[in-house]
Image (tube, rainbow, N blue to C red):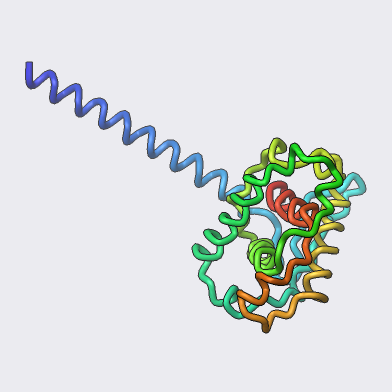
Length: 189
């Protein structure tokens, strides 16, 4: 009887390990396909448009605060995930469109998101339309990239990267719509 029990436990362990290996491989395949997007140091190439033109986002001219530049990928990803968790908790999807224009995000948070976009490490943002307001969802692909580029340009023109984290955290100049657009961009591209 105890031999039968040991054999049963071994079989269950083999099945559990096999399932873990399968899940790990599926996760790696999903990340590989996301990593296989065309990336250039200065331009992030996006899907083909109906005219077979590439939509591109210029990330070459993005300057980041020193503390963010010094972050390793894992630290940057964790910090940006915390911003994403705050975004989800604020439940913008169920708020009136007018609430998206409210200025309530600070430059440190947006600096983290811009750094993620620049490094192409925004894999933690799921491709889940249920997280985004209909105003964002009804935006076409060209407009998404254009709006994201406009946010990057605003960032380059208005954020003093020489300021400390605390100073940038008091620099509240970003709307919920802009932050939503950055996360939506990450989720789709």
